[in-house]
Amino acid sequence: MSSSGDDVEEDLTRKQRREQARGERKALEQAEVARAARRTRLTQLGIVAAIVVAIVVVILVTTGGGGKTAVKPGSAPANATVIEIKSLLDGIPQKENVLGNPNAPVTVQYFGDLECPICKEFTLGALPTLIPKFVRTGQVKIEYHSLETATREPEVFKTQQVAAYAAGKQNLAWYFIETFYHEQGEEDSGYVTEKYIQGIASQVPGLNVADWTADRSDPVLANEVTTDAQAANNAGFTGTPSFLIGKTGGKLQPYTPSSLTEPGPFSETLEKLLKT
Image (cartoon, rainbow, N blue to C red; front, side, top):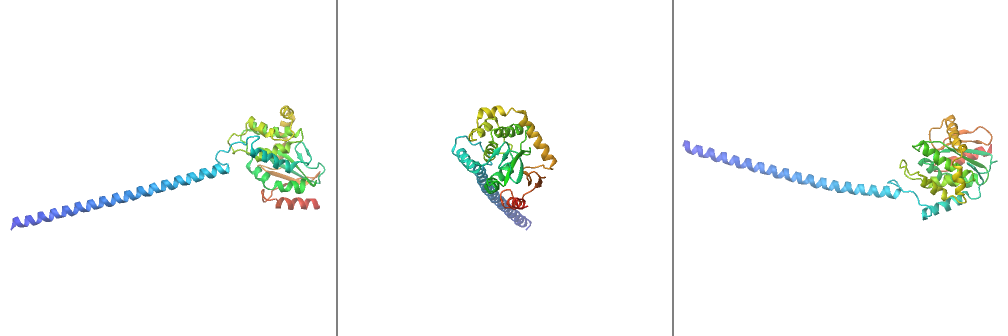
């Protein structure tokens, strides 16, 4: 009897061990299935992430945010820019840094940094409407002044701004300024080199490059950049673009437009001044 009981107990023990082993195998199988599922999900997520990265790269490249290269003078984009700027500016009086009739009843002083992308927004946004409406008609003149905000190196800033003012010695500063803004490179990429500046100058119609090169050494132009900075500081300006607007010959007041891409706010302000 005792032996039979021992056998039964031993059978139960073996059965329990088999059940335990079966349970362990099942647990291992379930764990392996779970791991396989996780690997599949991770693989899928990796594929999705790779696709997203690829899309972002394509967007950056196509929008110019992923290492935009300088426009090559003589290329189709450069030629299109020259035509666009000539259409905007040809026939409008220029003298040094001033665009428009010197006797225009209203003056706009525009403080900018040639590397400032927000200035580019204004140049490509509101300005192309304001120039034909107010400047070409002799009602408003715009004076361009320098204020370092986006350019990281002071010497680079002085060099590029003086280059624009040197074009102004031939009354072509605004062609240089507009071309520079149209062909801005990627911010903080160090794109403003001597080659780049020479390329901008080569696209200014009618510019005598030899005279322009000599004029870039004129200390008066470097002093003008310094004077502009002092005027901006006196006006309390810390960013670009910044504006002073008022009746010509009178005290100009700071003006902050609600939009730099839509001409409406500027137009309303200028029209009110012209009526007073």
